[in-house]
Image (cartoon, rainbow, N blue to C red; front, side, top):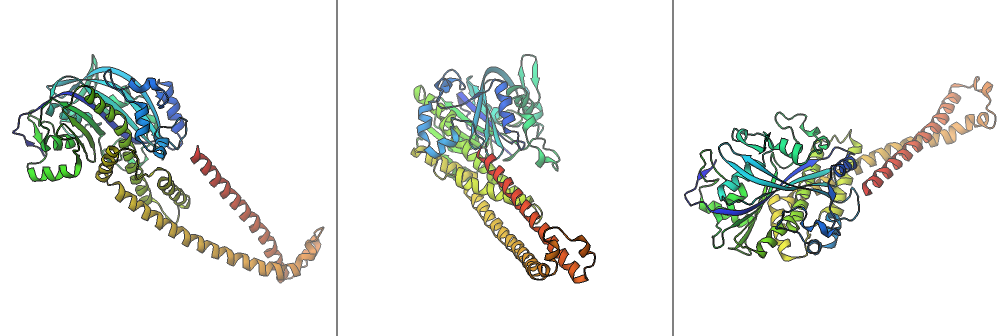
Length: 480
């Protein structure tokens, strides 16, 4: 519910937006997805290729690869910026587009340019589709926010979305889902895992965070404009306009707005530049111009973009692991228990970093983002899950070992003492089949115990070998 604003709407002369869609990749199809993207003209992103510094961000903006490498600690950089192909690291594939479109909001149309698209393939069968959009036309701030809010809705959720469409000449895309997955990033949809949606009534896409894309927004106001808490609050909640075209805000309580901004805003360079983050938006609002403006925009495309991706990766993987634990059947899905233990341990040991950036700005910003995502609380919950799984596994293994020990003891005693003394002579060398026809009841029991003991030993050896080979193959696949 929005409240109409009384303050005069400011104008934004530059709006750079990135829309991030997280998705789950079908099991075992990561390499196939990557190969398909390469065939469609996507290019692997590496820091060593300096020609990519200004390839995907528009004519006026670039990302310094040297600065990007120095921004992150080495163990973080090795995951984010690998120089090799592996399923254990982030694999970014990008494609420049540079095409102009119109976003129709009913009676009003907003021109925008799609600069490029990324598909980032991550460990744990997770991926991100990032669509970069720029609006260079001077527009009212409310209209920019309305654009971002409409664009992030992949599906028509309410009546307002039904009047939203993307046009290019004679081509019209009625839903953002159609535009993203048929025009901007074709070829991705077949690899989206939709198993979790079998019982859903309305959703047709596998969302993790909510039913919309995550928004990364850079807005430049006229120099001298005073960015206040109302502007920041509206940016974080994408409060644009109501159906009559009036500017709105999602709260009428100034004290609440101030308290909210205290928790979600990084204002080290205020009033000229302010950053903000919540569960679905990360924004930078500034009044700077020239070189400083380009540096801030480059940071949103580079260093801060990767930090946000890593934070989203942590949150979604933790949610995914928590969901897997809630649906697992401990007594039946023993392999799933092993897989879940291995996944939680791998995340904790290899991917979950408390410190990711080497610079103070990055440390403070990412700390705020992680706090607003609730990542630490999710991590504690998953670690408790790991403890519970280990306890369950220990109890199950102890019980199994006790049963096995009792069985083996029984066969050792009966077969080694009773059985061997009764029938061993007839089994030595050439088997005396005629003698077995004259056995007594106790000799038949001894023969059964002796032969079944051999069969059980062979079966146990086969099971152990099969389990060892399966574990070995899983470890090798996880490394590659």
